[in-house]
Length: 110
Length: 110
DNA sequence: CATTTATTCACCTTTGCCGTAAAAATCGTC
DNA sequence: GACGATTTTTACGGCAAAGGTGAATAAATG
Image (cartoon, rainbow over all chains, first blue to last red):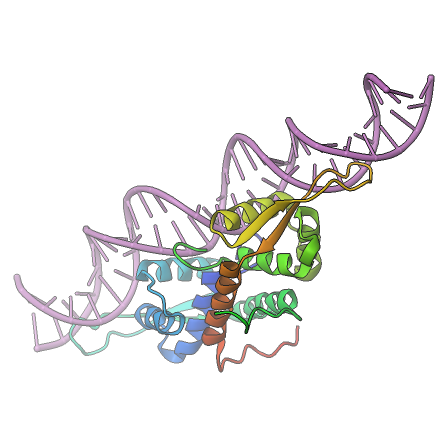
């Protein structure tokens, strides 16, 4: 989270992607989820780095999966959003909500 | 915006605060708006730096106000969100919306 | 051992943040 | 009616963390 307590934009996105990916949340899937939903290109290295930051802060947990029986199917690191992670997400979203409360962003121009 | 096109968390907050402050959007008011809405303590220097970044990117515009007839009432820099700024805000919000679409965060019970 | 899938590394730029200095205005007092 | 004290507003310098990329490395299987 930015400085003390707050999630950066990308961290929030990564957390959401982990939730979306559910029981299959490992680097490659998380990365794909982000690229599809945000419609922007993201280096996979950035994803791993954010995950590592989030892990150190206790917002995600990591466990090792088993290798899968396909060529190159090496063992995965599966991620899960912790309770603290959900709380941080909620707080961040609520902050945005308060900032945007009653604001009209446009709807007008494009 | 982070790297190419995207607003960071704080930049988005600052832009929203500028909109909220309307015709009285200068450093001190913007800062107060942010502290009240986000409920966190923010250094005013951070606000000015973010405004300067946003200005260089063409997301806010600055014009000089007149001095006000109060002690220490020096001339203000008034800020306004540009069309490009609104677009950037909208894009960022839409990205969040897509990421969070259908996700249950545990509902807004703080 | 070549290939494929997954993760890590080295390095860089930009954000975010703080504390404090500087600037620009008015006020009090003489 | 000027001068310094005071107040409001803005600018500066520096630092740690976040965000980003491209390429290297690791661990599986065919």
